[in-house]
Length: 434
Image (cartoon, rainbow, N blue to C red):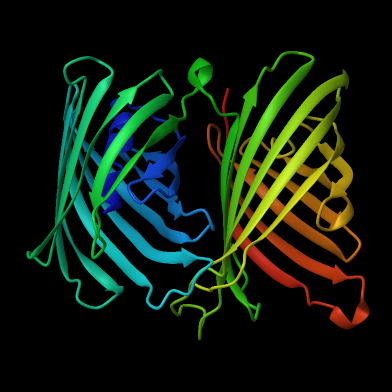
């Protein structure tokens, strides 16, 4: 269903065709008709090939009540596009969908894989899309699917857009999504949407949507997505995470930065390619007030709030709040500006007591196309020392791809609780907006 849920965002990306890699983010926040908080970020990366390109998307839809219980829909999608002229695009994509619940027992997990071919026609402010495909593996009872969707941008007046999509499953069950959006500025929309998705009841959503731009239109500073595998770990198979940062009041002397990060560790199954589920959903929200002391030296007051939600398990969630001071030699540690990058931080965690940490990045070699570097991250409190060592590479111009090999270990300060370290490898995508 993502194939046409995201049609408006895809249409915007396709409206300006550039032969360069792109990274886009759309973040929705609001309420649903069951009075639950609704949060949906969608990360998309496009890599051009002659007359087309490859793309990858990661997104999740989170709906939670006042006790932080609710459903989370995960989508992980990848595909290839082929342009036939200026107005017609053919697309082949594989969409993986699963639905889980936070802080409550989930008796059954929907797990579907859509293999879908689409044709997208765009003329002016009108976009039409038709698709057909099949389900591969996953929950029983799903075989064929067909999709149709459309968007009318500038309906009645330029800021108003109408959206409507349909999905036909097994030529028997019809699902829908319909709504409108009102552009408040180039990066902010007010939206309303009514959705009937698979076997679930129809739900309406109302909220705000932030959309990334570039240059003067960018409300973002950076976005990144990371997927890592742990083949020898007894508990976890994959680690999926994403992060985006927004800057406010920035000038030569100071800035305020907001960072929102998610992480979803994936549990091991009976085998490495067996069916598997998320263990938990972790949100990290950070706020920095940073001042420049000298060239290459920045100090900051930092605050971090972490929310740790169990998935498909009726257990209480965990939360912690940290505040302290930091010293760094560049505003964003993840940007490869310097051969030596560092950040140190110390303060008080209201759950774990005094906490200190730091990050160190060292450039190993720098070529025209690829940079090789290493990173060491550490954090210590009264109970545990956490270490993360990685060897990484970075390539690409507008969007960087970053494969890595790493080792992680939690060292408990009580010897009888020692935990083993683990080896992991993976791939990340990183975008710095101008």
